[in-house]
Amino acid sequence: MTVLSATGPTVQRLSPETRTPMVCVNGLVKRFVVRRRLSQLLRPGTMTTALAGINVAAFEGEIVGLLGPNGAGKTTLLKILSTLILPDEGSVEIGGIDVVRHPAQSRRMVAPVSADERSLDWRLSARENLRFFGTLHGLSGIALRSRISELLETVELAATGEKLVGAFSSGMRQRLLIARGLLSQPRVLLLDEPTRSLDPLGARAFREFLRREIAGRQGCTILLATHDPAEALELCDRIAILDRGHLLASGTPSELTREFGDDRYHVWSAEPDHAAFEALARQGMGVRPTEELDADGCSMVELELPPHSSGPATVLAALVRAGAPVSRFEKVKPTVADLMERVVRARRVTSHA
Image (cartoon, rainbow, N blue to C red; front, side, top):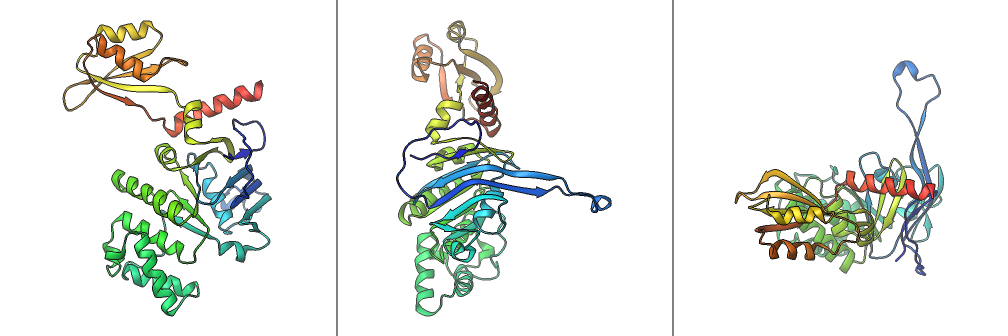
């Protein structure tokens, strides 16, 4: 599996890959002029670097996640891939087509979809919206009607195709936006925080839909920008962690979790002061009782397993053998802040090695 890379010291894994990538970004640099007050307009502007030598590769049918906080450079990268803005340095190819030299050709292969998309007409039905955008793509007649029916079926909106979009849920509108993006049969789908406005159940259903239908059956390559680690870890084949325009680390979800995610667990127990927890602490494990209670009155105890420990199953077995009542034992998912902190720390160690 090919991983993403960046110039300069970074934590990454490289493995041989002979396929030609659908998306190939090499040494991408983008700078912007910092906004200045009116009194300063006549002075030379200060530049800020949004992307600093980013390299990205994504293959057919693959979902690549761009993970990072606001201002990391995720949206800027997607806008360059969409030909909305031009890079200052580096090259970008989609399906072997240079997006700077041949923007019209590359646009035919790309469909951007944003959570803030406002182009749908809520006074029209889903089918009427697709008919309008299909016409803009040069489709008409039987070909357009057939394509619309096919896409409504693909995004699981066939039963509501005549319903006004204003009555759609957030999840239904997101699926309709995907259908609109697929009208031109693109080979690459660019998603900018697509589940931001969805509730947890809707977000999970939407992620399953992307994996099953769009990447799986349609074979569409997906680049997804998000600041939700759970979304990236659950959905993506590979993840790139960006911060302030720099690519800090990349790899598969299991690789990144193994290297940068600590072994933290929440244990819910009716006896948080049980001697079994003290025994774990004496073995070098981090044990921190909290005041958080669940609906059954059980207290939460945070456990942090040291490196090279015997694993959570052994810890849970030890608690049960010692007679500690355990109602729940859950892995703690790292936040974006957690991942960033650990990746930056690892990068500093690599830089000074």
